[in-house]
Image (cartoon, rainbow, N blue to C red; front, side, top):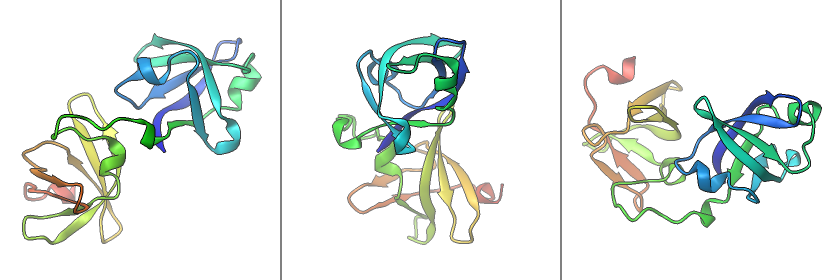
Length: 168
């Protein structure tokens, strides 16, 4: 499953919710009639009635959610689509989150740095969230200067990191 948004809170009294978008294609993922799987599962599936932009997020109405109490039960629910339903990018330097999560990060010598557990999307660039062998978490900018090689078939990505980046 691929998370395309998270319900932040109710909006108003008619069952609308504020959604933190986690997709590059909100118009497609939140189009009227789209059915979204939920995590936790018992909260859904949810069918989009309509969506409209609001302060960098979306205001979304789902079929059958008609008041604030119903919307309140959806707080912090993640909205997902099946990753098998999403076409892979044509650009060899473009990747979907689910392709990167689980890859092993190694240095140029092949020594393990960590494992990609999440992608944080920022305004300037994406950040790879690594689970380090020592239990710490590190953030690495997903830019070609620091991640020159992504080997999906081999299950790894090579990182050339500046001294001290992982100690931040």
